[in-house]
Length: 291
Image 1 (cartoon, rainbow, N blue to C red):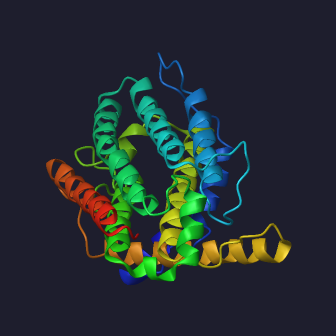
Image 2 (cartoon, one colour; image 1 turned 45 degrees about the vertical axis):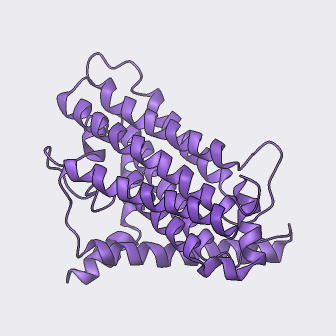
Image 3 (tube, helix red, strand yellow; image 1 turned 90 degrees about the vertical axis):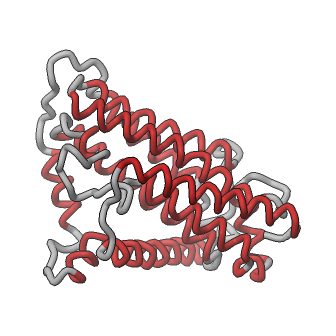
């Protein structure tokens, strides 16, 4: 959807919303080639895919109901998010190429700034609730609509959205469509991957992006989320999260058309600004006692 919106706004027809899936099917049919000396080349893409699936399972995207074996605690979610960042960095390092090492170094620098921002931003919303579980935070926001338009909520959501954009390699932090070795971060880490391995990595990045977008959308507009385990409520929950993710993806793509990738040394400034917004949200939440 982001590719199609960008293509339309740039005056191009675009390849269609199903083109990424056709590319994925093509990659699934190809035998991966690994460089000499690679140790974990085949295992890391599957591990990255598993972690991305676990991340989406932990997030309350469709319903606020949780299973005892799937804790949606904020600290667990951030830990899984960090684990995925480590796996993708190891993929870049495993090949032993200069570009892969450069991309992994840049990625870990961004991740070191992203994870605290995600933690602080959502923690600001959890203070009035008295619990760090995401489903409890969503349920509280659904029951008190006034909290959605509060200054604390606005500060926290802006900080979280900036962190998600940085974590998923979107503009202005990274350009997902570039292949210039001097500017790329994500592409540098997966440069040596091919075939099914590259397909696993791409699918994992899509799932990660969709899950994080769904989390931001649900925190911003906590409506349509199922509170009961009935077929009708779950169908509405699935439709609601799909619609919200599509709208958010379109907005992000439209904004990206007017943005350029910033220089690497400016990225810490952007992330520092987002962390400050999250810290202000925490401070204001403690002072006001309201989300």
